[in-house]
Amino acid sequence: MLFRALVFCGYAFLLAPGVFVFAIAFSSDRFLTFPPPGLSLRWFVALWQHEGLMGAMQRSAILASVVTLLALAIGVPAAYAIARLRFPGREAVFSALTAPLLLPTLVLGLGILLVFFPFGLAATWPGLAIAHLAVTLPFVVRIMATALATLPADLEDAAATLGAPPLTVVRRVTLPLALPGLIASGALTFLISFDEVVISLFIAGPRLSTLPVAMYRYVEGNTDPLVAALAVVLIVFSLAIVLLVERLLGFMRAVGR
Amino acid sequence: MAELALAGLSKRYGEGPPAVDALDLAVAEGEFLALLGPSGCGKTTTLRIVAGLVPPDAGTVRLGGHDITALPVHRRDIGLVFQSYALFPHMTAAGNVGFGLEMRGLPRAERDRRVAEALRLVRLEELGHRRPRELSGGQQQRVALARAIAIRPSLLLLDECLSNLDAKLREEMRGEIRDIQRAAGITAVFVTHDQTEALAICDRVAVMREGRIEQIGTPEEVYERPETPFVAGFLGRMNRIAAPVATVRGRLPSGHVAMVRPHRVRILRDGADPRGAENRADGTVRRITYIGDVVQVEVETPLGRLAAEVSGAAPEWRGLGPGAPVGLAWAAADTLVFPVRA
Image: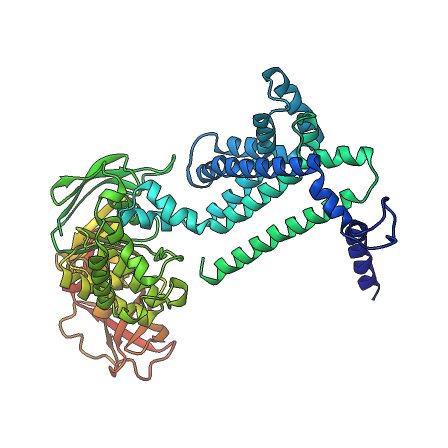
């Protein structure tokens, strides 16, 4: 009984901010008051018309897409090499690729800024993409190395004995069987990049700001429910991706992958 | 369909002893050869070298007269049935069987025809639409076999492919594999640690030990006339006698060991006539093991503990129990003699 109460409190603590945000997002008031005096969609309309935030959202979506593609393009071959090939320095490569997971993002952000500045990469698209790769690659490499390591090497050998050249083996056997891992790491990469605040704050300039950075700056100067409406949009968006991944992976288990 | 010739094949993993040690082996066209040996004797490594999955440190692999040592796996035209079957879980049985044909660029209609043919050969024509996980172990094994022979390989390799099946199915499959291999006339190499399998289905058996071939010959040759104590001991049960006994060449010389198969040892009850058996040993019964068709009687004798094997239907073992006095007899001609290795 006591345990149940504790669990309930735990969930309440975790979910309460969301509930408040949801309530305030539909507020008719001009301030962040709770409970809201009335319900309306005016803040969603205001968000739609807010050029700064909408532009940042578009930029973040493009950036997250590019980062996802790059992270998979770099991370999957790296994970394949780590999981399948035996070469000197294999452990070192794996450690180097996953090390950023251990660093506080604040440290990472400062470090990246210091390195980027002399190269003129700060506040540029390539700079943002590289910085986001540093935080997302470890996830891709970790997830894919595990996914590939659990894939029996016999399957690839069998395809080769049947006449499939190496790249065909990867295309027809390895990647289809690693698809759940690909989808999971791709979705995770997209969400991490889309949500990334700390490092982006260091790198993003006044003209090239991502959505989380724009939100952060907006909140500094305004106290209206517009940000709550934006938060609701983001929560719904993230949930949609997570549900989609769930459905895709469940579907794939059902067809025997 | 081609002959296989291995010459001076060597492979060493890391610092340990060589897995394959200057191995020479010739398999004739259409022949079914067993590579038999305990685990770690190098038989699977040899097979993987032939398939092209493991590069040898030295030596050559020739198939149908061509040196294929440096040829990559996918251009070797060798069918391999894996111990794990290695069926593609994301393809149907027919998709698995057709994969090799697809890689060879066969047109769709021709491919479908040959997939159906291969599935019919393994009696799975009805199950082509199923995925591997919807098939039983025996059916998966058949799909793996069909997939390997559908490409009409010059050489078929089988890697312990029966060891995951239960005893009854294994016996059935081993007959089927033999029939299919013979019908197709494919040269085949079958790696196994199970001597019964090797003796039952292969034309010749190569017994391997520590990366080398200890003896190669027909099943009867390696079983009845083993050349080394290892082969004698590995194939079937064997009694080992260090004391002097009569052999074809007289008495057992020192520095040698004598061996006799349990089924060549007769059981004598109540002073029965040994009838031409030069060797006799009297003792007491230690244990009787009834396995249905045969009965093993272990007897403690002055020559050590010896086993005799008689038919379950034979009268000699009836009424025997542990502690009963009994005589054993065997002919000098059935006694194998080997020098003891230093």
